[in-house]
Image (tube, rainbow, N blue to C red; front, top):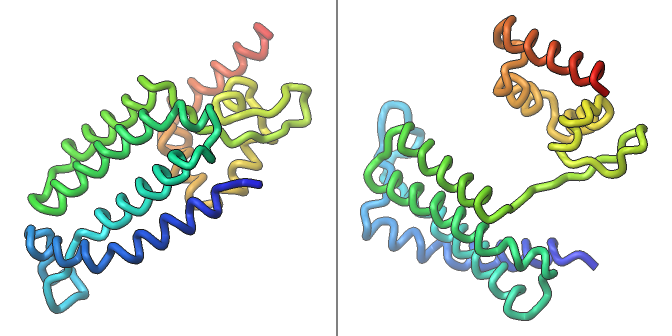
Length: 192
């Protein structure tokens, strides 16, 4: 039996229960979004919902960990995930309070990703290809040039998200990066 639905349910319950409290603290600490020309709200709105969301996730995962329900592999990645999430959370709270410029937000995300790499946290969605490669995660799909895997990934993501991801890797944005990827792919096929 998978624990994911139960962890999500507990996280939802804690988040729902702590949201009103987070709104009170948000107003008290100045974490509010004021009305403006490009806003739809007429009164100041608390921007502290992320505090409740973070609390819900942390409490749910911590509860299942303390009860011994998480696997050894999941437990080994918890410090990296917790530290990375804490960085993203703190940057978000600081942004809600003071308004942080995009480069600083990017730096926070970059540091959080670096923590995940440092702690060797890997996110895998395994896809079975028609080739005898065994289950492939995203890295494996790229390394093996799995067209089936990329097609399945595209179907899971949906057209909009897949298009954005492909553009982020340079596909379709300019001529040269796409040609470079194709040449590299051709060399990899020739080398075997």
